[in-house]
Length: 467
Image (tube, rainbow, N blue to C red; front, side):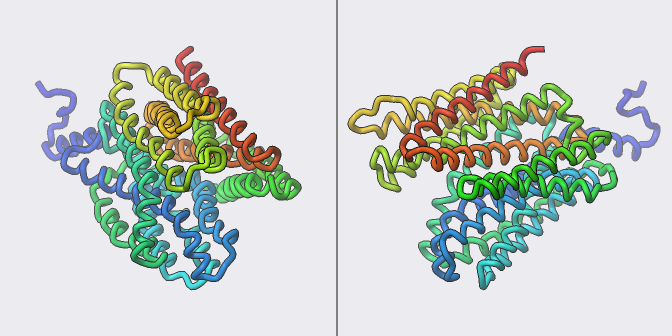
């Protein structure tokens, strides 16, 4: 008697059925290893590039004869393009196929890196960085979606942990890699080195899974409203402390664009803004918790260097060393949380992680300082990083599994949007505090509010465990 999986009388049909069912629940080895190399290699490519660009700003300003303040657009343009096109790239990936759009994003990013290396002027470089950001917007959400089709469901937590570990490692290594390259070469080489890595990652894309595309039509007006909403939000947030009227107007434009976009997308079965996924309670709570914890993380990242240098009188090198335990602890906690998620409810893990993040931030601000504060500060930043690592992996896992598999691209886009929204809110919060308060009071207030934001993320995660 034939089993249900082999119910076809044709051996060829049986082989096709087995291959299809295998791809639906992950890829077989060794193809899975090639796919993981492509996904994680692409993540390293885009995260490392974003991290090393900051180090090069003084050199770029000097060689291109531009004001240091103008060179900030090299970073802003990259981040702005990502946040504007995360959700549209997810929708394009669902329509045309995840593998095709993911590979196109890598190709665009690599080609734009060459343009960056050849840039003769700041406007050229800023335009090339926009193209890099557009490529990154395709890589980030679709890489998460492809992980879901690469690994079996039982190993998805491990896959997300590897993704978090890769991001933390690339972020931590970015400044050191950038400084090392600049010590032996000029700044264009920071972008030129992306070419060989990009080519290797593109070659590995042949091993990626290729789930069926939906062929849904794209709504160009919705894409434009989405881009306007996020562009106005990011620029308005950035300009609000220095130019309240301009910043406030842009934030009002962002809010109006959001209202129009939601009204336009509400009736759709698979909207650009994933309203269908936000109706799922577990997904919605994970998104809110993610925004809260990323807000706390960014506020802490901005406040702590000022605290260490201005109040504690530490050098820039000592400040960098005291910040290092944070990403290192994230790297330790990410795989640990993936193992724990098999035994402990993810809502509880996220709550514990958010709580540790909040405690670490609060201790940094409130702990009575001894004559040598370096050891306690290293412990506190390490505790914050440990908490963030414990939170991030199970929260992302829950977010992805709460979405239907065919909406994995939208789930990845929502995850990336939540992260960037939290990072923007955290930097906006510190900008407002620095504008309204004396520097030292702003730092302590920022750390306290960062702890409150992380505590809110922990509380929301606990609410997710209740029905």
